[in-house]
Image 1 (cartoon, rainbow, N blue to C red):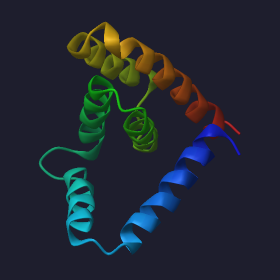
Image 2 (image 1 turned 180 degrees about the vertical axis):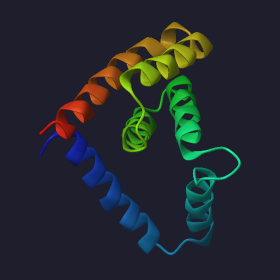
Image 3 (image 1 turned 45 degrees about the vertical axis):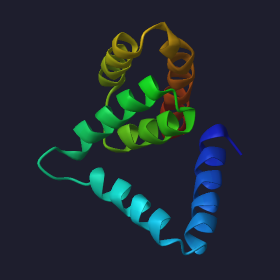
Image 4 (image 1 turned 90 degrees about the vertical axis):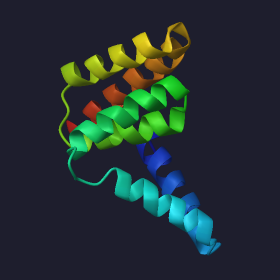
Length: 116
């Protein structure tokens, strides 16, 4: 199993376990997150770019992978992704650089997976 499949499988498996707990607060938070990234006055592509930049500044590798996957799904180009990376790096500073490295690696995996 490659890194992308492993991440997506683990995320889905654990989200299912979390939802099975039937905790009202957690379910409402997950729903809020889902609705936040839905198309609205701001389009999904822009929302995913914002989510990616924020995730990088907050240094959440799982969030970065998730938003990179979504950015890939909605058709961002490598040039657009690197602009998002530049915004996150300027806002977050040098502490973002290790996450930038892993983000570039994950983006390349997404591109490789799509070319198979």
